[in-house]
Length: 234
Image (cartoon, rainbow, N blue to C red; front, side, top):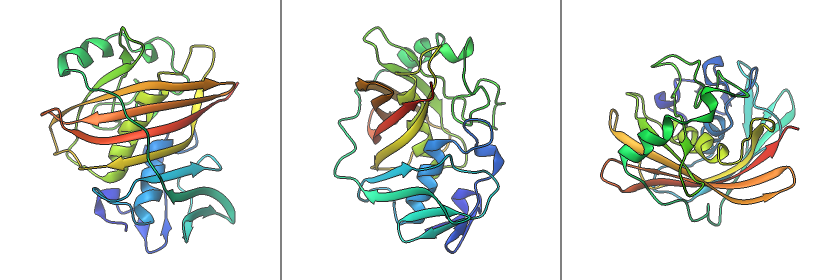
């Protein structure tokens, strides 16, 4: 169901993605939009895992209609939502200090295909974007520190799980975008707490990358886990 935690963008079975929540220029951040679509079709913390498949880049500032478990814009299918049998194993946690150190080497600081991305864009101001900067770990995974903003919602946690997984596959000469994501949320974090997000590649095959990610609270408890398919645009 839609509520204020989604910034009032939903009204019954209609919704709009505000321009603030962009990923690539002109379209919505895949993780945040997928979380909105999942919540609009019944997903909730502690509930069954949901999978969202993006059929088109989610348009911004456009009226979207929810019909059953599908989302449309002007009659075109944008996304499909389904229950997920399991979002994957996730990735192990690291300490806050380790995540902070990894973030210093975030490759997006020097080369970013979408530098204004709501989640991982370094050109977004504090309090505007999430500014989650996943840096490399010695074992090939990524880790990012995340101080949770005052406004917490299911879509926000889905968004936080999105890019840290993607950056395990993104290369300077080969950008990727989200195609599908499955998420299981045990609990939402409290506003203002320090969380750690980790990511890992499960499989690379041609233009597709299967990646895992997980979010951990300040006490080390796992809050959510995701498995996503990212698709290279080149």
